[in-house]
Image (cartoon, rainbow over the protein chains, first blue to last red):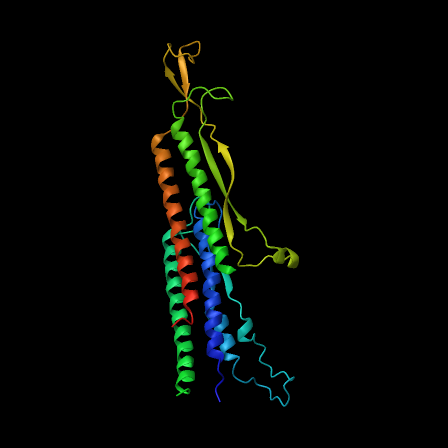
Length: 138
Length: 147
């Protein structure tokens, strides 16, 4: 039987968390638009998330007890952390500041849209659960 | 909460630009000032920006750990005085004229100040835009689960 809140739910939750963190970082980039020597930063999540998703499958070693290791050596989905990267910038200013306003604003907009999409997906899942609960009441 | 961090970062950028605007205004206002409390003509001033980590919370202090994704606030580290020499104009009737009849005026280029002012305005607007983006995200989060 499927669980009420399955892996998919955790995935959505982690993605929301990632979008919030990334927004923090991008806001800091815009705030430091004219700070000499400031290096623009960004966050990537897809790789770590992909690894964690793969870790849902059973590992190479056979386990006969809950306390056994199965040789996966992967972070569980709940603990996956996004990776902070310094954005490569070919056109750094003379003061070594690498923030590009257009790029940052585009990233903020993209991040915002992705966040909205995620909240809508989560909302619709809640609504479906609600529907299932309500229909059983008839 | 996480959203408040982003909002604080944006507002640090806004207040830094506002500070800069004050300094630019004082440069323009004193373009012809020949007397200052320090003596001599007004000297052009400029702000120095620096990226500083946000004030740490009690929890962070307790763990004594700096997160790699810690957002850096934009801060005005200080105000530097421009040491370019004053512009000398011949005006013997001026009370501040020297023995040869020259008056030292501040070396302020209106074009330069206007360009800096535009930059400060645009940076401020960029911060407002990212602030609004954060606000919209927070509002969306409140809508989760609402029918």
